[in-house]
Length: 170
Ligand SMILES: [Zn+2]
Image 1 (cartoon, rainbow, N blue to C red):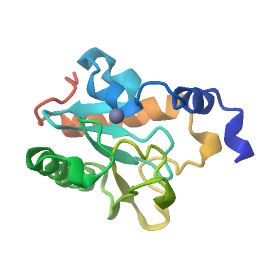
Image 2: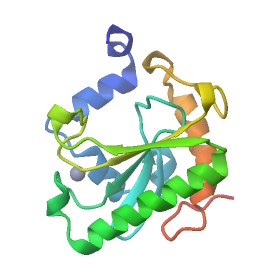
Image 3: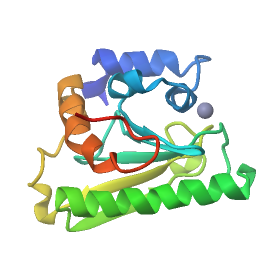
């Protein structure tokens, strides 16, 4: 834990989470030109895909319903369907585009379950390789740098270019 406390981006997160705007709601409202700086890959009608700012493996993505909701039951059917379709689309793109040989998929519902941002639902998609030595260096918290996250964004953003709401990548 002490490894991350000094990190400025971590501090920003800790400070921002205390009464500040919800980071996922901020992403959902972001204009396309801000996607890269906010680590957003795409924003569809009801859900978005972004990089996890604190990945526990390389290429760790989050799928987030656009509306601020803490529980699956709070989502309308259309929002739920759109979120889960985006989970499916994300897994497919990660498998196809990164050569991942496995994917971890899951949701932590509530702080007691380990959710870092419990007030806004999100699903985790984590590409995996045997030994996790391929694609990009596996990162520990201490090595999660803005430069690393930006490089990951540039690698993954083109995979979503065919989806409505994707960031235009040239
Ligand atoms: Zn929110």
